[in-house]
Image 1 (cartoon, rainbow, N blue to C red):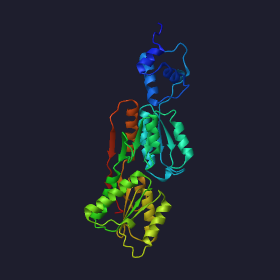
Image 2 (spheres, rainbow, N blue to C red):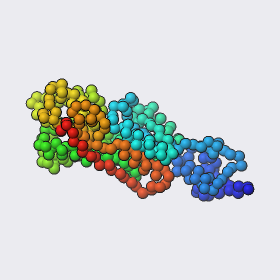
Image 3 (spheres, one colour):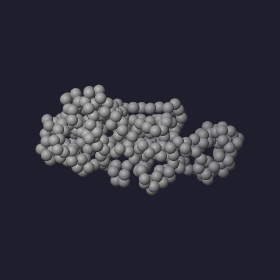
Image 4 (cartoon, rainbow, N blue to C red):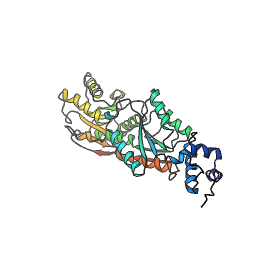
Length: 337
């Protein structure tokens, strides 16, 4: 039977011009992800077969989503949060027939930016992880009309879709636990100042102090890299302060917590009898040494899973209304507090 469906039918069904259909099917020119999706769906729905099969239909493009991480070169293994986060996203994407690629996006790194831009030519959508205050990458996706989900609560752009841990709530829980125990001189080690989540964490710390009526001290808060050496050095300096009355430390993850514990143990300070330690993140590293670390578990596998689920639903037009998922942190008390 002769196929009576024509390119005009495809264009009309997709709401585009015949030229656009020709560009997409031949692969000669890149159009927006939304236009390409509509055309390819029209081809499939109508059962259109060109007289001579064009290259775009001969080669089935794999469905790929891009997971973008704000990391410096060689640092993904430094932060135990990222591995289960990626695992959750990868497993869910695989279950839906999607490939997951990973792209590093680093502020001021032009090569990383170029790789990000190049990836937009073949991906169906993007997960932007742990946004910096610089929202340049998010703005690019908005302008190019590429589906994306932010992994982290945005601050300065009207993001339709995002999944995040309740970072402010985790900071509040960590501080409250220690304040309830009578600690009034707590030192807080945050992540990089450029991360939006660092400001949410700081807000949680300050809220707990306000509610417990304990004055906040700016000198008892510092930003630090995710590095055992850097957090050890930072805590060495804090402990060397004159008349230091430090009784507890809150860190942003387990790497910083072990750096803190290393500095305390060098000075033979007992944990938690003299100084208590509470971490955030909840990775397996919290129970790999002594003492086991009290932590606020963010459940990064779930966050990765929900990020991939939301993005694929947006790509497939199963989710259209703005959607936000906030995963609460879970307090797990152990020997360090």
